[in-house]
Image (cartoon, rainbow, N blue to C red; front, side, top):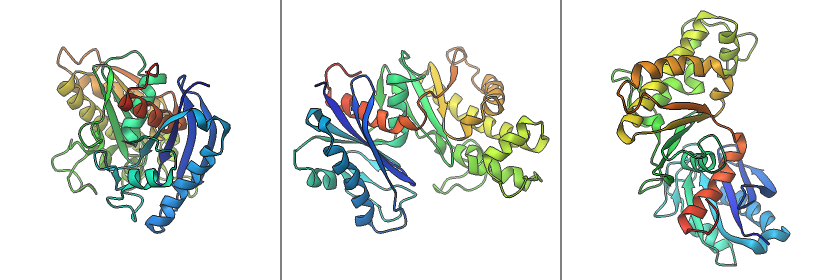
Length: 314
């Protein structure tokens, strides 16, 4: 039987699991709701329930390690997590807890959700074949990860590539991270909707989401178009700064806001042309993500395989 990685993807709404093989295929998938408002033990119990269901699959005997992708921040060297949307987990020793629960002494590798998505897109998706890439999730927040010289670069703590907290507006709104004018506070779905409402956009019915703003923009609503243009400008400034620092070849963007398609990508390409002006970044390619909701699990497996040097994986 082909060797596998047991992958777990921990987010604010669900905890998903799968057994992932060398071809990126997912078997024995399962998930539980994230009890984000409950205590630390109950959240851990949801994780262990997912692991127990995976362990009951006949393919478990082929599992070589466990890869965990988690909302962050993470502290990979300590195996700890502090997801913003799971208040009970602050410096929670997740890796030690999972190792204690498992009886078979499997290695456990922790990765942030941004780097996990990046590992997935580089292995099986839109960044495949590129040596240097930035992959981003633009949703209720803005996160990301880096591939440098052909390999995932999570950084010393596991948080490298977190482009959402690059400041692109020195006098901008305060960000929950403690800084000001971050990409996330301008370009997240929540921020797009907030700006549109502030500027007089009128939602139809009760839907005041970024998706509803995107629908209005697609119909030519000038306020909705301006909200997306502002978000695209912030994203372009952050992308150009990152590309200038590390010389990227491609930028891949996924997440709920990216589902708006050309409503986001058209002004983003235009703004990137204005910001990425130096000769060594002008060639930068922009692509939509390909793996969707599978990216967290596929990426957790890929990151673990790279970390442990599993043969024939990447």
